[in-house]
Amino acid sequence: MSCETPEEIRECFDKFDPAGKGSITTNSLGDALAQCGARVPGFKVRDICDSYKDGTITFDEFLKILNQVKTKNNFKQNIKPMDEAKKIHVRGGTEKGNAWTTHTYSEEEKLAFVDWINFRLANDPQMKQLGMLPIKEDGESLFKALHNGILMNKLVNDSVADTVDERALNMPDASGKLSIFKIQENQTLALNSCLAIGCYVISIGAQDLIDGKPHLCLGLLWQIIRIGLMAKITLKDCPGLRALLDEFESLEQLLAMSPEEILCRWVNYQLNKVGCKRVVKNFTSDIKDSEVYAHLLVAVCPEDKGPIGLEPLNKFFQIQDMTKRAEMVLENAAAIDARSFVRARDIVSGNQKLNLAFVANLFNMYPAMDDAGEFEIIEETREEKTMRNWMNSLGATPRVKYIYEDLKDGLAILQLFDKIKPGCVNWSKVNKPPFRALGGKMKQIENCNYAIELGKELGFVLVGIDGNNLHDGDKLTLALVWQMMRHYTLSLLTMDGKILKDNEIIAWCNGKLEEGGKDSKFTNFKDSSLSNSRAIVDLIDVISPGHINYDLMTAAANDDDKFLNARYALTMARKIGARIFALPEDITEVNPKMIMTVFACIMSVGFAKENMK
Image (cartoon, rainbow, N blue to C red; front, side, top):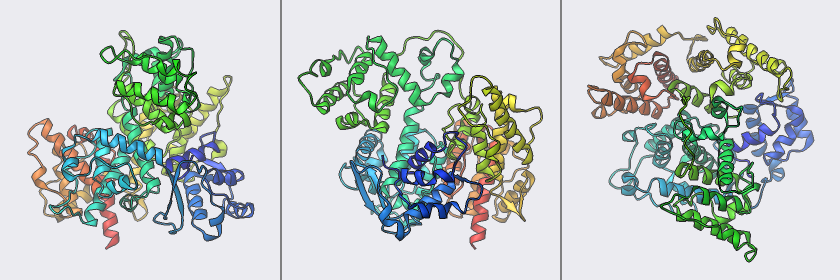
């Protein structure tokens, strides 16, 4: 395993943070660095640890340390990739690194992503017109295709529809040229759109994507693809998932399960249907011999495409080559148009990412679940989804799947408090897992009470909310998360060291609109006139003149037109650098909470531009 992308570094870090408190001890720093491929002499580790008097190191601090030790010449000989097998080595630094820094990436993952992109975007007229597809598998073709930012934005939309208004993309002129400035805008839009759908984007800048730095590009591509693959593994899209629950489990517990856990249960459910006694617990060692996949394909094969047999297993004793066996299984997958992501060697080697993607795609195509009968489906609301994406974009570990279940022990909330106000959490006061059956509940409630206490210290309005509400999965949980998001957003805006209030944001925005000669203005964030998005695009045009194409704005005579305006407005805001999590519906329905965040984020871009003058 290469530990180069932020996602993989986080995975390594978390091995030394089993309590999920968002930090590791200085005693484990050397081992954590070694796990990430940086073997640092003990005396140097001790020198580093001397700077951390409290004995703990947060993830952000760990990233800085890792970057430093990988970019200092005296450590050059000590840095070794974790796994040399099947890795491509690339020389070149990050924006802050030296040119000699060596990064690795998986050739198998690159090939899998190329296949997936060519398949998913095959019918995109713009991609065809630009001659960007199909992407070749060899060399650096994928990374060159990402250069102008168009492909990355297209993939975001493929995973989560309507995130990007593609009319806002900068396209090459008739001669096929696109200025570096326009390319940077496309990449800025792509990165901010990735954040909006819940990607954890850290230590990746627009220039990294322009340069096609393989390890960074592949890490971000995987997050985008994964989000799209897992999006429909829900009760709403597949009510039959209810059958995967044990007798004493609730629907809420299903919502809190990771996609990997749900898919493991789904595979075992299908295996049981065809009489296979194997039990899958992972998508690495448990699938290497292809037996599970052979039975799984038999179980989910639709009548109009079957039947599929177990020839790969029947011929096993004649075929000792496991790669050949895996290839036979993939030929069966191809017969039902489900051959994607994995090649035979990826099955035999147990590539976790690619096998997870293969199974997720198979589930999306052929869930093959029995009728679950009538029951009330618990569906995530738009506001809950937005908050979840925001939390995940900050690196909540493990990823938040369902707010009311995943925040019950208080640990994820405390992680987020440490993000919105670094250092505010005293981790020595936090109870860590595992939580015992006897007394564990009280330990979790203590964590939740501590989170409420921190919220009050930051001035949150938390009347009638205590730790029991959070632990019980009460809807009041959302009130706390919203105030955390609000505080984080407003912390980007300070004047004379003070965080601005709503009326100050409104006054600033209206003042800018008037200075720019715009007619639009609003009295508060509930102003019904905001539903047409005119004030938002006007403010963007004042802050970044010439960016808005007013020909794309409709008269907002109906809901569909208002939606088009809102999607364009949010896309343009992200394009100029605003990190916005609101959805178009938040604008058209005038959701005052989310509209406030939109104007605040645009205002922060305005502040940054003014400071640069």
